[in-house]
Amino acid sequence: MNSDQIQGKWEQIKGAARKQWGRLTDDDIVQIEGDRELLVGKIQERYGIAREEAEKQVSDWAN
Image (cartoon, rainbow, N blue to C red; front, side, top):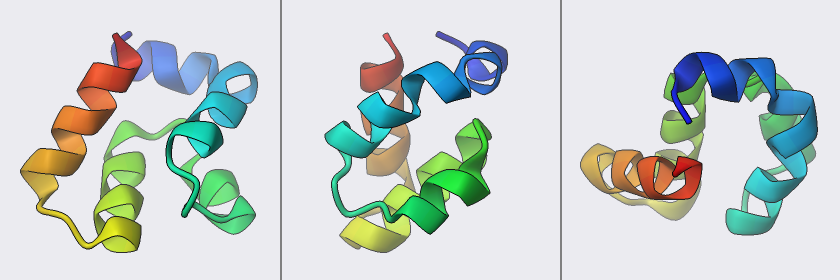
């Protein structure tokens, strides 16, 4: 799933994202609105991990 697909299907997949990354708040989910870069940034922030690791997690999850 690429960035456009994530954004287009955000309403359908935001629950899965919340389940995958339980530290994301409801406000985070609303702010992300399907923006892959914001998702990566919020994961990085909430989990205290490197950007590369957050990007890898999002890529793995999206596939």
